Amino acid sequence: MIDAATKAKWVLGSKNVSGVPAQALGSIADSEGIKHICNDYPDDDWDGTLIYKSKKRAIVINTHRGSELRHNFTFAHELGHHFLEHEPTYNENGRMEIRCTPQDIAQGGKRIEDEANQFAVELLMPEDRFRLSMAGAELDFDLMKSLSIEYQVSKEACVYRILDFTREPCAVIFTKNGATIRSMKISRAGRGAVMRLRELPEGSLARTVIANNSWQRGFEECDSSLWLAKGQQGFPFFSCTHGSAEFAMTILRW
Image (cartoon, rainbow, N blue to C red):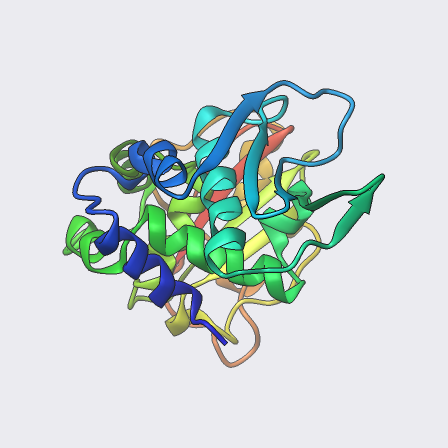
């Protein structure tokens, strides 16, 4: 089995990518003879697809949802399917493809989608360079914003990468429709400490901020018992929330 991150490092080296990797996606595809199209397909339920036609390949990015930064990740994800030599999973009227839905890219769960995500992360945010970019900085919204701009990836993709290399216990929670938790990412030092929740806890500062449709300018101390499992409490605990009822992000640090 080809290691996805190792393959991405090989691509960056063999294609002589020295600048921002997101800006080189088109040239990487061109060097492989892969046609690439970005277009709006409002009636389709996929974010990106890799099309197989004999030995030829094409990548199509659905720009209907999300920002250009999100589309960069989708492009890198589809390149991952190509370089990792994944077999097509979709066949309609002789047209063979790998169609990737928002759930495939955001949540993975299938082996080839997980591998394509790992490839995309390393391709867009190479470990050695990314570690240097975040060296000495604490996880906060300013760091997330600056690295998102530097690497031209979404804030969500960026914060997941930050947490891969964060030594301190912390977590980032993404919510939708008010208090519903859409996803959660926890640093290694914090694993096992944060309770698995479906909604933001009643009485939590994050829930109050979202309900009032306001943003926190900085971290504020809050009740750790609402978030941490028994035996993990007793430390100073802080949260900071940005967003709205539709979509919000909360950072927890302790």
